Length: 362
Image (cartoon, rainbow, N blue to C red; front, side):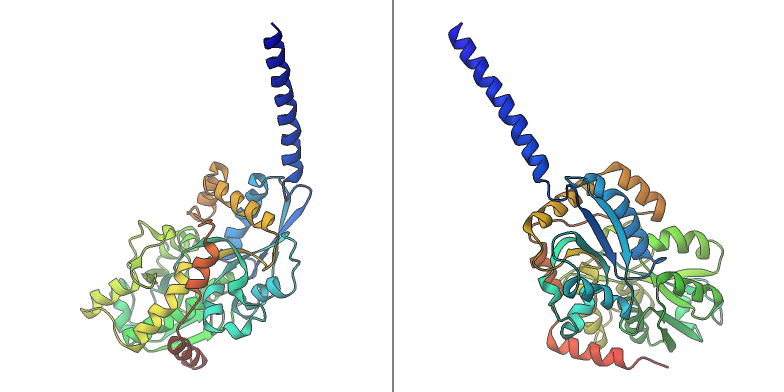
């Protein structure tokens, strides 16, 4: 009996200790009582903004401490303004995160434009992606299938900025195919570019698979206004791959489209530049980052929350409904290493692309 009482007493102490440590754990949750601001580096209305808003509605629920979460848009210079603000101005206390698109390529192309090295940011989540490029069917002499692109006259490519990766990838692809075209940049968001496409101001544009399948395909493609030409290839430095967002799509990657219409794989300096470009941009199209020097507790908590979000049913249902795709984030401990590797371009490729971007067709 005495032994039983001693064991019971010990068990009671364990329960009491567990309760206390549980309370301490809850109190120690990094985001408890805080508010997380998610900065989007493009204007409202585009694909990045659409994805980020679904993210914002759910991430606070799965983070330990369940903080309030708000979104802030900061567009400009093809995404540079918001990306630079996070590293140079935003608080580094773990309460300010970036939800960025195309920043990996911008940092690889012009690292000197970042006062704070983008590779030093804390990469919470990495998402591979691509663009599905589409063309108006009324482009002379008429576009009924992707191969008709080779006979097209009066092609006008739209882009958010001269160095916006989507626009540069289309330019490289068209130059590889030998297609004449005009190039118009300066649209502040994907929504603005879409309106320009609908007006006929531009007749070629690219969108991420989520936006393409939720907006472009049910609207412009089904109405007969546009058809998809090809999606940008994804290249990890060694192999081509299809990102999760485009798996199952009938749209061919660029290198397969090129081989079909030209009878061989692309080659030469333009092709090497294309591969050099899609390596950083296709590997880390979207990133969720904290500023350099953010508390490790914030990094771990947000990465753990992102891992939970990957398997969250409510998030998946809303994402599927909103843009026809459930983002799957790489949220691993070695994200910083993977991101730094993808952001590095060799000097020759960087110099060629910098000169290429400065000299778009009129």
